Length: 488
Image (cartoon, rainbow, N blue to C red):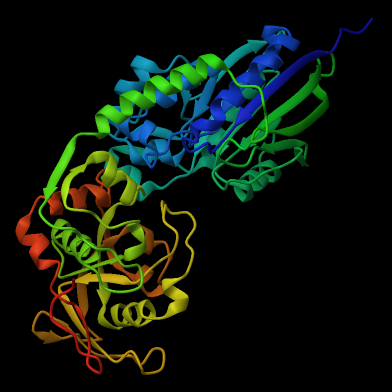
């Protein structure tokens, strides 16, 4: 007589990005599944980017809110996403994870660059028992190595890391799961190129798979973004054949779910109050309002461009106005208000850029199709690209001329911009990936400056009265319709 099939339910989320409003619903659904199934037959996983410093509960509690709510929801493991790994320092992550996380963090392709070992608050892999089966978990994250090196980590090629861990774990486990914060295309490649993986649970590219894909014998699942769905997989394993013989999966909509976990609601309210208190701290006292204009020159945009230029010790500062969401009133400015107007986890950087590439970006910046361009990803949390805000240069222009012929001259200090010369430019990391202006992705000798965000740069500027006064000096001068030298 053959042994009975062993059954397992896998509940999974990814890319929640601190959309806490969904967590009471997700927790209630997970609890309902656990009541319907024996406790040792349910496995609950998160595939990264649960934390997002755009949201006050995360920023105001240093993401303690995320970890405690994940504890209450019953997660049993998570893999770091880039929003965890790149927006917090390793020192902070270590302290908060060791103190607050009641579940393991898996980092199969992450090591400390000094020791070449997995950080002591992570696991390189995890083996656990469910329903009489040994289940192996591998967790890999996208290898933004230029960034991670600055933070003291070595993030290796995820495909090589998975291959190595599969070789170690496959002989010892019944089911092998890869928790992949790499994106759908990489997950598909992994399934096709690497043997021995039963299931890949994915994230990073916010893809939604209404039911798992089956490629080369490997199942691939993903649950979209922002907690709009939760993933639910049910499988049956035949111990005699040592393989999965049945697998059915789906995603369960959470946005319209009526049941909510009251304990998570209470916990969330606690952390909202705590974050509000933290974010009430004063950043600066403003003697005058600072206007913002996405489609024209404004003091607040100039102030940020000047701050980035100073922060990066560059000749020229460039940043798009769409990084800022609103202007500022006079009076006390809090951390919370600064977060509201500049929420994106965007880092300053410095690069060498040709005069020709700078001029091309400036010309494009004056076109409606660029100003109104919606941007997605790369840390951007605004609505449109907006105009380029600049510092260190003066642009003489004629807005009535045809596109790409509107700039008459550009001065860097007192000298004309030399199209053949290379300039040291302070700007933002988003541009280096080709987002916004293609010419700004052609920079050389790029130096990313972590862990500070551009809102930290802006906070520094807002405490400098001379910098605020300088932000009113006009950088763009329309020679046909001349205005005052001041930007109001």
